Length: 127
Image (tube, rainbow, N blue to C red; front, side):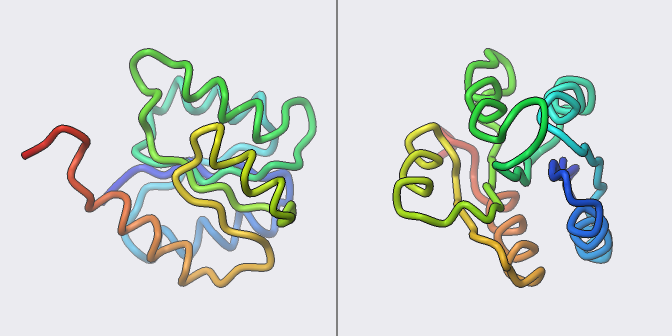
């Protein structure tokens, strides 16, 4: 299974996702704000990131920009999980390179299914 980075400033959401993803046999690392999320992304080299948008220090869109700019890990799948569910927000997230945009409230099973789908997909360019 994969290593998942969960970045959200709401501890109960982080814990809920951590429990659900660990139950699905993933290793989970967490961060409580955007700056810590980027530090964990660089240090832990996760296989996938679940990223909130509204966070202190650095919002999820800024974090996503920096992830996509990383020359070595910029193609890491990112699932945006956020309360910002207006069409303009979803469009912005996808234009910045999010692989999926899931509004809150959410079903933990949906997150686990998405994680599994992205981790089992063939890497770009594989034949």
